[in-house]
Each structure stands twice: as C-alpha cells, then as structure tokens.
Image 1: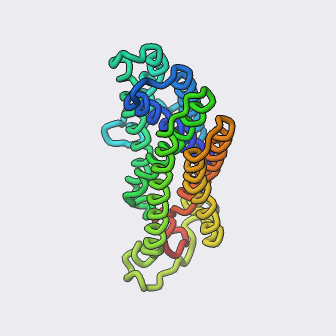
Image 2 (image 1 turned 120 degrees about the horizontal axis):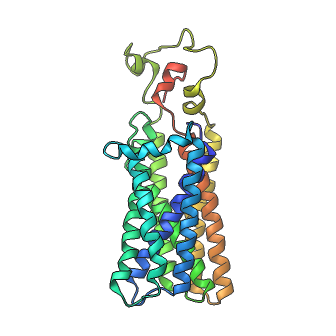
Image 3 (image 1 turned 90 degrees about the vertical axis):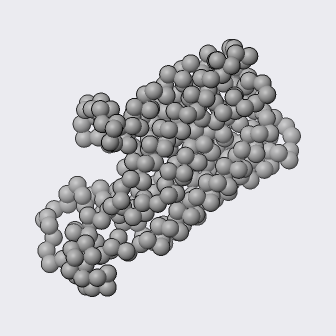
Length: 315
C-alpha cells in the first residue's frame, strides 16, 4: 500500500505519546514513591503534544476532514471509531495526571495514572486492530501486528521518561532495565512479523482470485480495468524492491531495538548525568529513525488482494 506520510507520522507520533503516557502512569503507580513533580508534569505535557500532533496529522489523509467527527458514531463495529473515542477519553486522565503529582501520597490521585495507562494502551491496541482486522492484506493478518504497535509505543515512552528524568536528576535504574526488556520484545515481534510476511508472500494469484484454476494455473489480464491510474492502483498497489526492503529492515532493526538496548545497557554500567543523558538521547534518535522506517515498511510491503484485478501477478 502507498505509505502516506500523514499516516506514518500519526502512528509514530501519537503512538510514542500514548506509550509515554502509559509508562508514566505505570511507573508512578509501581514505584515506592511518586515520580518527581517536575518529571511527571514534563512527561505529561510532552505526551499530550505528541498525541495531539499525531491526531491532527491523521486528518490530512482524509478526503473530507470536516466529516471526521462522524467516525465516532460507529464504535460498535469499527476499530477506527473505537480508536477515536478512546483517544478523546484519554485526554481526561492525561490532563488530570500532572495535577496528581502535587498529591504524591494520595492514592486516589495516583489512580489517574493507571486510568491514563489503560486508556492509552487501549487506544494503541485499537490502532493496531484497524490494520490487523483487514484479512484482504495478508501481511497484516498476523498476531504480531497489535503487539508490535503496543511494544514499539511503550519503548518510545520509556526512553522519553528516562531522558526527562535524568535531566531533572531523578533517574532510576528501572528505566534502563525496562528499555532493555522492551527492546528485546520489539526485536522478537518484528523479526517474527517479517518472517511471517515473507512466508505468506505470493499465496494469492489471479487464478485463485478469479476461481479459474489453482495457485499454479496461469491466468493473465487481457485488458486493464481502467485506462488511467485510479485510487486503488495509487493507494493499494505500491511496490518496493526486495533488495531495498531487506536493507531498510536491517536499518530499522538496528535503529529500533539494537541501539536503544545497547545504550540502556551502558547507562547501567556508567555514572555521570551528562553521559547518561547523551546515551539516552542517542537511543531516542535511533528509535525515532527506526520507528519511522518500520512504519513505512509496514505500509509499503503490504499489498491488497484487489490489486490482482489490476495486473499484479500475486500477493
């Protein structure tokens, strides 16, 4: 499928924002004492900015952005609608969370962090399900899609919490260990996803789509359904060369989970606020590059079965 920049920015930016909100709420609830107010307020503000920027960019891909509000009415059947409803609801605890850091001993206020974490995770799961529910795109019809969205968001979240914490001299080793664990999880899920996508390639052909024979039968198009490029050909027939796909996967893999894991490992072994901050910043930059490439590949390598009727030999 054609990887629209607005969708890539939306899923990476808002995903990182929800991941930051999730990790912030969980850390605040699980630690012996509450996070420093400066850390909590800064993280909350950054999360809201990332989420809002991502949500606003998502409207750029709509043909009629002014009608976006109608999507909220279909929450019973549409994952897109559920995502929108949860995204709006998440703003409530996200706004209340910074206030809770002024009441570190009050368990009721701490509950806002857990509510923010639950709604953030739910929103990201809905985003993943929008794509995982599309059976017509074979690579997305896999168990790894939703866990990948969720784990990548959480990895970005913990990296940003760690960086802000070290700036305010409130760093805790749990940030490094969480980064290493999440990076390993992301690596396992993405490698598994790529292998699964490669195994499922070329399973549908023009013969199986038309019912004119088995997978080995040779069926070709006599004439194109249209004389000019249309929406389906432009949006659902994007092709990325295999050699470039492999290179981009390696770049994404090293940037998304190898480098963040190594930088987190080094922060455990060394001391010094400036050095630790620099290492985490390198991890954040590498993560950002890797996440954007990963999301671009997620769309670029996907082919809709409808393209078989437009001359594509197999999907």
